[in-house]
Image (cartoon, rainbow over all chains, first blue to last red; front, side, top):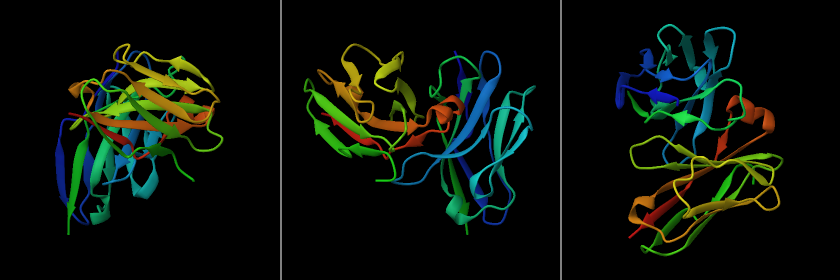
Length: 116
Length: 116
């Protein structure tokens, strides 16, 4: 069975500073990895994904994430945080291949707060 | 509408009652998913439909939970003999089949169920 760990319940960062939200995973075989964001009173929104290829993937709103197979990590990063980035962030995983298409396993989420 | 629509947005019921939650996916999306999100947790997979059939219902917690999608569009999640532990936000998501294969899901805002 697969699992995702987001070791930080909360991350606080000043506007303009770089941010990192951590994620580690466990899955049989190769992983498909995802980041979703949840703003207050809004549905979950897809941010970015790693399927194959370049370990550094870029997504919406200037976010990027780096896949590290040896450390089984997929940390979310942004070079310069904005107050509007404040939200709840979820990392998710599913095994590559097979037929478990939309069956994602999510982490418990990390609240990101960006201070002015 | 343009997004995934879920009704009701809030439902309060009494222990033992029957509840139906409705999901109207994005037009043209053949894949539909139900997830459940308890307070402070990430979403947990319940069931996945490809067209009218349930392709994977391994996440349904017990036989009190059932979901249908009779015409391949709107889906209803049905919960019988509700228990206090069923209280959660029930999320619906949809995707194109290609998106299903790579995990890019479009989520609704959820139906918050409270069982008293």
